[in-house]
Structures are given as structure tokens and as C-alpha cells.
Image 1: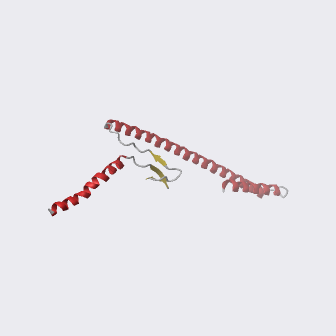
Image 2: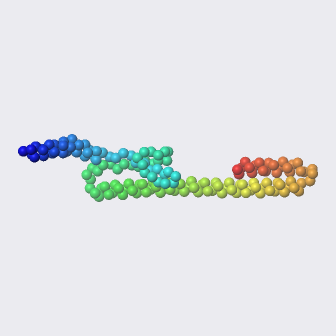
Image 3: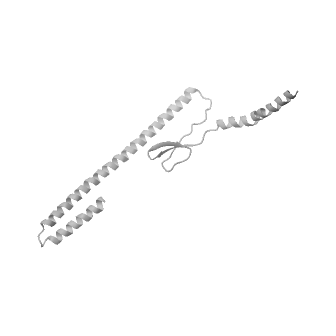
Length: 154
């Protein structure tokens, strides 16, 4: 008799758990998960559950299954993958355009700096070859060329 009573007491917590917590657990599993964010930090791609700044990309959360066919879900997943792929390619094209524009700007700046450096060298040559009468004007031209080079290329 004592063994039957003790078995009943041991089964009571399990029944309590099944009656109270199992429905809550099943409900929690059916609720969609929270947002996910895609972040690029120091050139490294990471995924997190919190926003990581202005460049974070919120990833869409897939809705809970409604009991549709596997073909429907496969089609939805393929459509979503194709959409994300197009977005990624578009972002990569934009990033490449920005890099190309920056490279063109850097090349133009380098050409301008070489030109100003050459003009300064010519002004300094003119100053060395200037007569006593032309020396003041040549000195001013050389100083201005040096200032312009320093302003544009420093």
C-alpha cells in the first residue's frame, strides 16, 4: 500500500507539468521568432538579434507554417531566396559604383597634384633664372604656386 501511495505522489508533479506547462510550451513554439539583423562590422558579416547601427539590415521573419503543402512552402522559400539574391546583387552593384567613383576621384586628385607640383617646379626655375628686375614677381608666383599645392594636396 505504501508503494502505491508513493507512486501516486511521484506521478502528481508530472501530471501537473503536462496540464499546466505543456500548452504554454506548445504556444511558445508556434509564436514567430523575434527580428534578426544583418550587420557588417569591420568588414565582417554578422547576424544578431539587436540592431547594430545605421547600416543594420532587418531580415524578414518567416511566418509560422499554416499547414500548406511542402510544394507551396518550397515555392515561397525559392521566391524569397531569389528576392534576397536580387537585393544582395543590387547592393553589391551600388557598392562597386561607389568604389569606382572614389577611385576616379582619387585618380583625378592625383593628376591635379602632379600638375600643381610641376607648375611649382617651373615657377622655381623661373625664379632662379629671373633678372633682378623680375625677381620680386617671380618670387610671388613661386610662393603662390607653393601655397596652392599645399592647399590642394595636403
